[in-house]
Image 1 (spheres, helix red, strand yellow):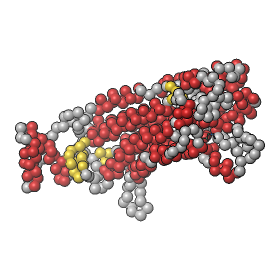
Image 2 (cartoon, helix red, strand yellow):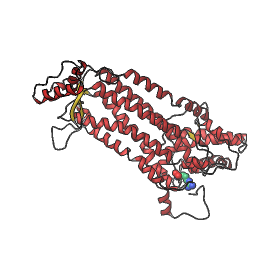
Image 3 (cartoon, protein in one colour):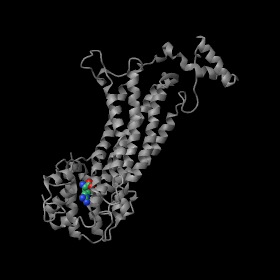
Image 4 (cartoon, protein in one colour):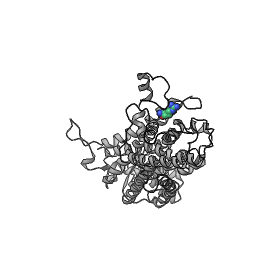
Length: 456
Ligand code: ARG
């Protein structure tokens, strides 16, 4: 099929296959965003007089219809078409002739793809924020419910000090808050408009980049057109870095759970349906779900490195190498979401063993509390430490009857309400509402944005 850039020769078929790679499949994900970008670009071209009223009306109507078609799943990349940008231009031209050919004035596929990926990323990050917030609330709820139930705390995997399920659950909730802060920083980098940078050097047409910025609900623009293009792969790396932060939180929790589910620990359990069997050992109820979660999270942690290596030592300007970043970046966004969702799905089924500390081997958990009792009575810490060590050595140590931990963030004073306030503050810092109304306006009254639009 003819290319947007067709000259008087045909590209070798093997070269064509090799260079197009997985674009035809991955670009389908970009379809609704490519149309949104064209709506903004077209509005702007009309404002600056490149499109007549009549032309813009025709184009706008066509683009809105196309958006609806994509939403309804009735959209494919035709055989022989190399990418989404070509497909959409082809459809417009087929429908409305020369007017369709005008939409590409003052832009390039280079800034089109930059824009599409940013619009998609904004959407997916919003999904991740929603899921992370849901998991946060679930964890805090579990922390409140099991606040008073103790479990051993370990250092070096050796029995150390008393901990509680209140502490354990809320630890992961607080970890998600820091992950969200990092995601917010990444989001700010995503939420700048690259459109108008064209091939990476701007245009001699008097493009109104502030207008497209506002139409697409961006916070601001990537001003320097060379830098806008340099952002390809870099924005992806920054976002990937923030995804790894979540991956670390979820992976740690999965590691704890696999350990706690072992018969040697036996701190928690799940209903049989959550576990998986062995093909040879009839007694097995394995924690595969948490192992796959841990493995998928660890795999995600490799992503920033991969993205950084694809861009390594590239001179400024567009390079086709950058196309490859889509292959690992786009699937990673839904990969993290699936990890968040599975935890949200299984955690409510967790069963906590309430008598864990009754086992003799945990009595030394309270040696520091015993030392602190003496300290509270005025005995210098080092002396108190020696007294208790001696009792342990002689086998006469008796754990104190009840200990209280009262300072902020300890098991007797979790400060979960404060964590909840912080979560609200962070979430309110995302400009989701502003973006939604901007995109709704762009699509006109008969059409509203479906953030989860996927052409596949
Ligand atoms: N498929 C290309 C990519 O993802 C689109 C941009 C193509 N630009 C070009 N100058 N060949 O990078």
